[in-house]
Structures are given as C-alpha cells and as structure tokens.
Length: 115
Image 1 (cartoon, rainbow, N blue to C red):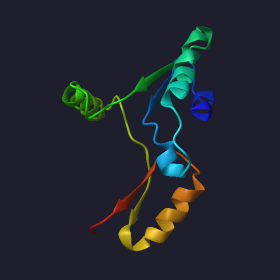
Image 2: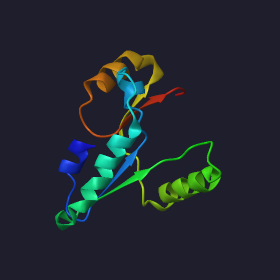
Image 3: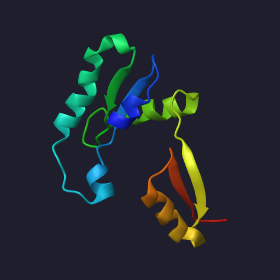
Image 4: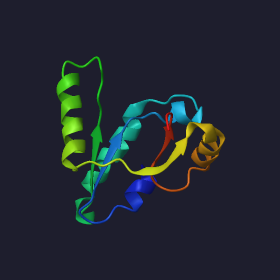
C-alpha cells in the first residue's frame, strides 16, 4: 500500500483490503499481520491529514452477512466505487492478459463473457 498512500491527498482515507498479492503474483504467501500493522501505523503520523483502515470479510465470521451487506450498501450509495480500467470481450482474452500483466493505470479489467 506504499504507492497508494504516497499519492493520497490530505483528508483522504486509504482502505487496505484483500491480501491476495501472493495469488496474483505467484509469490509465496507471507504473514498478513506485518502488512496490516504497517498500514495502520501510518495513522500515528496524524499531521499529514491522511488516514488508513483495513477492511476484511471472512466467510467463517459470524458477521459475514452483515459485513457483506454493509459493503454492498457502500457500493449502492456511492460511498465506495470500483474503478474499471477496461471491459474487454472474451474473444480478446489475450489482450486482457497483456494489459493486466503490464499493471499500468488504476482500475480493474473486466472480461465480457456475453455480447
């Protein structure tokens, strides 16, 4: 989250979510605690006007349904948005893989299955 924090404006909030980098990059899994502690420790530098939080949902949690409902409410009300970088038809899947592997820009690449 270092790069995301570095471009965060004053008054902004960086929300860490997921911890799926090993699955995406093929690297060995690492303990999540140090990364989350580092993210939250940035709140100690309060004079920057930036804040950090970590958001985690687990299917094994008794709060799973209420957490999921809260997440969907944030999406529905526009308080949370998911940037979409590109929508690419399934027939162009090779292009989608190339764009994803370059990692440039902000947003998700969506694959359109039906046209």
